[in-house]
Image (cartoon, rainbow, N blue to C red; front, top):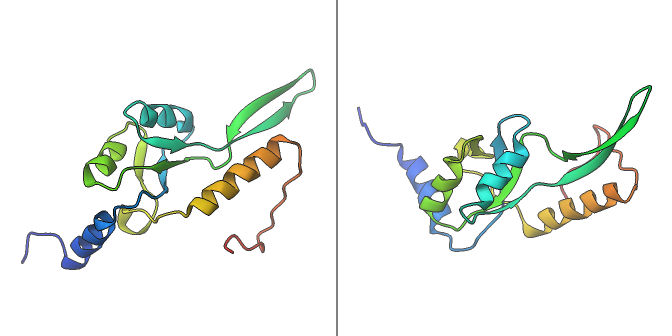
Length: 139
């Protein structure tokens, strides 16, 4: 029995880390810790993006607006394409894993991140945004 990692797993890591292009990735975070994780990611110089939307909570006696994450438990990061940078992201308290197959993460296109930014601005401008379960999420 071999004690090493499976060869397919090593080849995927090598292919992923062999790329010298910075890409966006989503990381899964601890619940309700998205802002803290984003701040901790920025401290060592990692590019991080947390899309926020302003929502108004209403009670019988008052209304209060709050900024909440557009996607709960997720923060977008753009680490340098090195294994050390990815490990630095994973060692941040509150980060569980990169979102994707086997925890390696799937790259997210810059156009999709820009679309999320546009969506957040539209929501803050008061444009109603409604999705149904039959809506397509990929172009």
